Image 1 (cartoon, protein in one colour):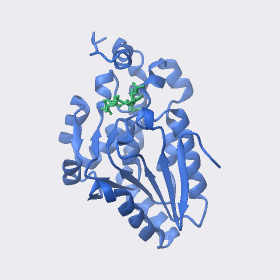
Image 2 (cartoon, protein in one colour):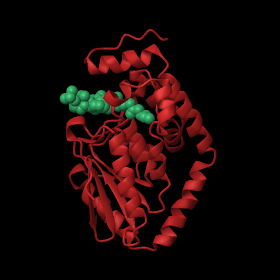
Image 3 (cartoon, helix red, strand yellow):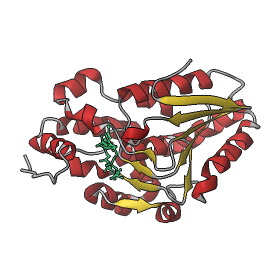
Image 4 (cartoon, helix red, strand yellow):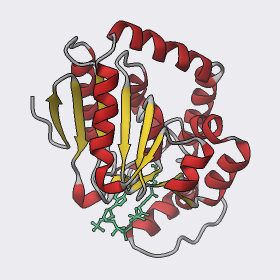
Length: 257
Ligand code: HXC
């Protein structure tokens, strides 16, 4: 199968999915979500695949959910489309997943990276949850997974200010599994994936399930609350203004309504 927004290949027992919307810094629209989830699910049911690597480009893992797509939507669109609920299927895979990150992992990009079982970062990686600058909040688990990964103090800092966090700080705080030089990052990630894929797939899927259970207790409720709050941001003026300002390349003029 070929996909419009991603490249897919298998190297021995490792499935590799490369986000491929270079002109939009791999912004995650609905089509990307559907492609990534479909490709990952094909790998997931294939016993010849023992690990899945998801990567982007040197410049961007993914610069977030696609702001142009989201800016068209209102609260009832969000609700009726169950916008981005499809990503949940990625966190539900039994096969171990590794995010291989160089460059920007912002917004939904950071959330996608955190959804994977391991996060291997090149030293060029930059993490952030800049949704606040658009008048919205994280919507694919960021407020929950980031807080569990790096704690309330740092998560609040990132989510309230929208600041970017470089790879060395993210590594120090425990967001990152392994920090490696950017130019060998993908190679390293594929090596780790091959190592995992060389082990029992049954055991690795049980192991990740067990770790995730520890991580996720209480998480699902948080995700539901977050999603409904995220949707409700689309009932505000500041969301329309924040996204319009992005499109017009100007500073937003928020009215806090
Ligand atoms: C749509 C995007 C995009 C995005 C970048 N682009 N990010 N398009 N959605 N999230 C597009 C730009 O419009 C531009 O297209 C092209 O990619 C290159 O980006 P530039 O801004 O020109 O590059 P640069 O100056 O290097 O700045 C890089 C950047 C910046 C710092 C990453 O692009 C940026 O701030 N992007 C938005 C990051 C963001 O706010 N992400 C959170 C999204 S909200 P053109 O056509 O102009 O050349 C989110 C919600 C998650 O993720 C919850 C969902 C349920």
